[in-house]
Length: 340
Image (cartoon, rainbow, N blue to C red):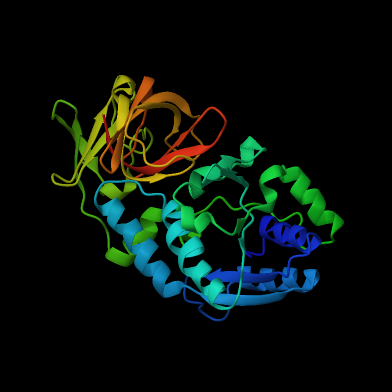
């Protein structure tokens, strides 16, 4: 329970279904001067529902498994998505293990996603409310992690969830949603990294032909497809098309140079289907708010080569790619290792 409307309504719905519910709030950063706001909010919501509430201190494992990786990925010229790492390793990993140790039979969250049985496999499926669907960030969960999971909000819209919260008299019914990374103040990831490691080393901004066009302020401040903030005057708009940590260089080109024909993901987490050997058709989503596009996927050892039917813009190493079928089931997912 984060103290927000989604997890609170999820708990309320489970109570209505006669589950014995305990709310757990995950603390992922050392509390300076007391418990963070989300802990207070979750405690108030739990009292309103009449359920027990616990706080799980995951700061050490979160630092080790999520924050360190987040920083290292940026230093390596990649753009990570910390949520897709946190879910299997922390929320549905260490936290779920802790819940099982105190006797929990099920593990529930306020994510908007459906979980169904598809033959012998547990299959994630997009939420009915597509605008709130969160299957993308949960697609890294293994089959064992999906067993015993409950996602009560998968068949609701956000408006329905808020109306249910209002009808229950919950104090957080109108609480605005946060789109920020939970451990990065003010969503300023560059400042977060600089505070830990110091100011990054500047370096050259190069054209795709190797011409020096300017100087960047540190690789951590740039990502593939970026246009603003380059500080270069040019007759045509320039975009970041590559990051080269070995040369500490930002590579820029024109918009057509931001497109590519495919990508490679590895390692691969298989979802509604077991590991495949033959090529298959799918819909590939390469960013959280990206519209999935038709593609052909070709398995290769513990990787999958994805070929778009039409070139796609700003494929970004380090980001997360999820492959769906036409019925919205998650087929496979993995980190983008390279654009093709």
